Length: 177
Ligand code: GDP
Ligand code: MG
Image (cartoon, rainbow, N blue to C red; front, side, top):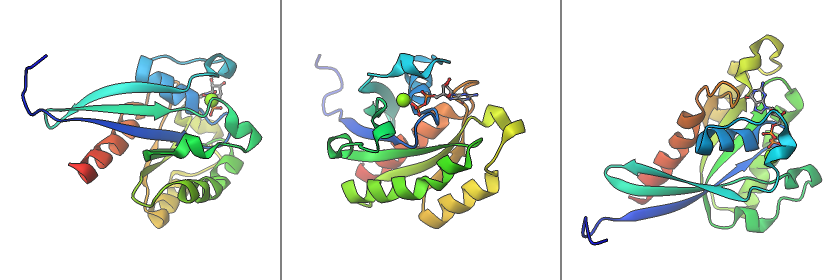
């Protein structure tokens, strides 16, 4: 339809990476459909979801990719990263090993994409604060030293989920606009 002559629109690819079971698929289903699946297997097979936002009166479509379980085999393919301009690096605040893996995910991201990719470090499952294994301070410090945004989220109770995705999408938009 002809309305808004000259209106620009944008399509950004964003990838979600991190160890198995940190909540990547649930973060995406919470953000795109406001759904949570207690059974992780239920979400396997989703390739990407497209979310439309309006920023500065412009239509911005974020095509957000989920690994669909590939990370279990340590074989997230280069096709997954191709063309990505944003990334969420997710760990589980109740499992230190998933936080320690962030270095490896950052290296993999750096191998497959250029350094201008907008990145946020996401400590998920903050609803489980009573069994926390990674402090907020540790998350903040890592993010600061690697130049990442940082947010703790809960896909279960929705805390900061929208904010985390939109920080990345707005940062990408600021780069290109
Ligand atoms: P993925 O392998 O990283 O995609 O992780 P999933 O999204 O499949 O989640 C793995 C498990 O963690 C599932 O049992 C989810 O229900 C659970 N889970 C995901 N996000 C949260 C969260 O924010 N809080 C809690 N308590 N559980 C979560
Ligand atoms: Mg998954």
